[in-house]
Length: 78
Image (cartoon, rainbow, N blue to C red; front, side, top):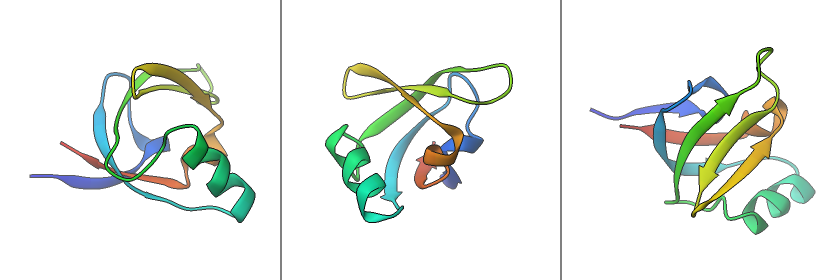
């Protein structure tokens, strides 16, 4: 069974398929330009000790996002 969660709620090693990217126009566009598009697989590589930033692997490269940015991304956890 799959479950919808915010990217910011995932733990290290968890994977999911991107379902939705929200945010104001500039943030939304920037996230899409970085490869965070619907259907892309993401995996949480590292989370900083205080939870900010979060490092994810998407489309073969690592990307660091602030916690506030990752709250705008919904993933389907397997």
